[in-house]
Amino acid sequence: MTERTEEVLEVGRVQRAHGIRGELVVNFTTNRPERWATGARLVIAGEWWTVSASRPHQGKILLQLEGVTDRTGAERLGGQMVFATGIEDPEALWVDELIGCVVIDQTGAEHGLVTEVLENPASDLMVLEGGALVPLAFVTGVDASAHLVRVEVPEGLFEEQA
Image (cartoon, rainbow, N blue to C red; front, side, top):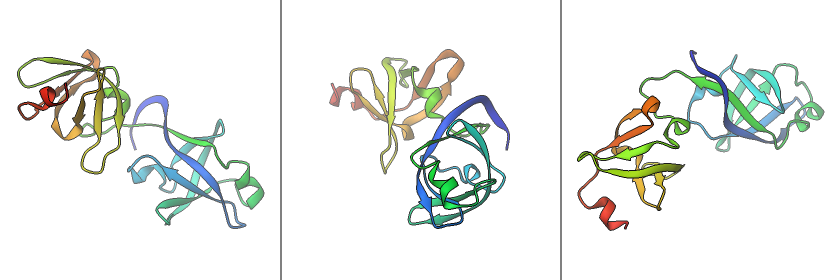
């Protein structure tokens, strides 16, 4: 796994302890399985932990961390946010890189800054200042260093939202 940055990013939340052997129920906000793979490094409660085992459980992931061997140790981590370093993937769109970028359509028109990204079953949505919603499926390129997101949108998309 190649690290994208030294900065840690939020990737989930520990919900609670599970069982008596120190397992944790974790709701990950990422679809990247390397986050919970054996050997993965995560920051929970301000400490670095190594995943020693994981398995799916009721739509979430059960994690076993090195050094957490009983329920008491696991309960100490309940409710904590889970962080990890970024991953290098030239094909991926990273939400943290989209926020604050200017959206430019195929005609060269600017449509404002991305203020947030909302989860949506069909395609996650960029929310622009002013409230316009643009599906990530329409993104054709991102230049994070220039703070630009290029999109190819159907005619009338921005007019319909005005």
